[in-house]
Image (cartoon, rainbow, N blue to C red; front, side, top):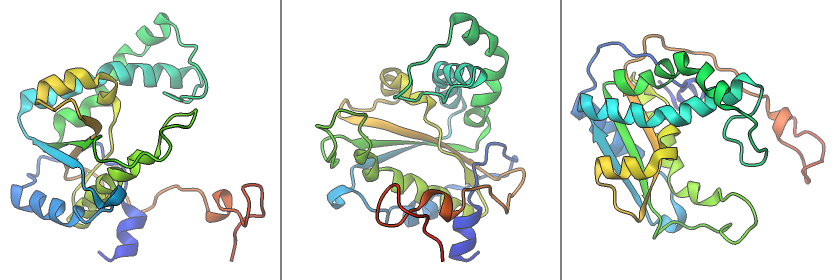
Length: 222
């Protein structure tokens, strides 16, 4: 699979076959993914490979509160977990999505392996830390690695998705996995052989989100 095909077809795989993902293959995926950039090339990532079924179930359970809020907000037309617009969900809204929560976190239970991705906050470059908004820049020190893992897995015939619902319960995840206080939980990535291999993804055209010279400038088009 060539580079363009990998980039254009790496999808969020949430259903997996029973095919194994051997340690040798996983090592190759991580060995390629490690060349991701990070702020100052400080390489503050630490990845935990989880194969134990009980630990996978525990991580799925810790993802349920975040998933419940996500589904409840979505059900009333909100953008889930958005930091700009306060939520208006009620306890009834949360209860109404109970039946859907287990299915939402099922990939964490059924994947062959979970990768718990953390980053050392003592080495990230957070250039926006003093701005009056949610910080995003420090993510540049970890999410390129996450994406490299997914694209490299795709090239190997495997797949997964970025999940972050467990982050809302970070203290409990920290205790479960022995994560030091200085490390932040960035993502939990389930990986396995996808039941279906998608080849066409829906994404906005370049002209929809790229402009010339200014934010309100003309659309960038060939």
